[in-house]
Figure: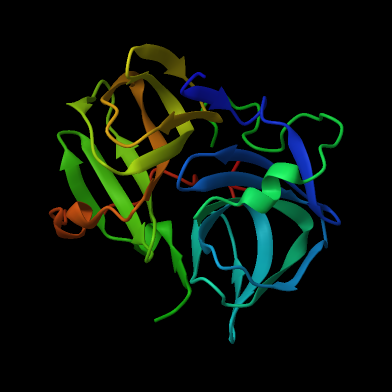
Length: 128
Length: 128
């Protein structure tokens, strides 16, 4: 298996309503590029996995435990295992990158959906 | 400690010549946004940590074990623990995101350097 892949060739998977992921699994961690539709909501949930993430595009309001913040590209979150969190996406949608340890094995069976062009990176060859 | 932070407020640390990182440590994983100068080289090295990453901007030639590829924004790499890898950066430099499990504790003591504006995300409010 190649060490290399691309966001555009990773299959798109349905995670929540209006929330789809392109997922790269390792042995100890999982990296996901998550495309969130305009005004979509990730309802409160928690998992044993630690989660770190960064906003790549768009805006979202993220709540971790008792703390909420409106986030823009380049802003990050850190979620210890078991801490409830939820997300309310802005009117232009968002793309975020989330990483998890251990691997998100529950995502291995998330339903595949029709292929579409990735929302990130854009067509600018510099990617910014 | 807040669950939230931003790439622009994470201190810049010297990792290799021409290679600097802004680093977010969790308990089980580390996320780094790495700024690589034009034509810089990450010499062959290996570490016990598993590493997954994605190119955010620019171009680079990445070698993992015996496999090499020229990578652009949105392209990814997966490096199992202990596998040697090296990087040769293109003439416009690059910014990449790398994640590691377990945490890169050796990076906690990497020297801090003068603050400068982050090279990613750009000033476009959409970040793409």
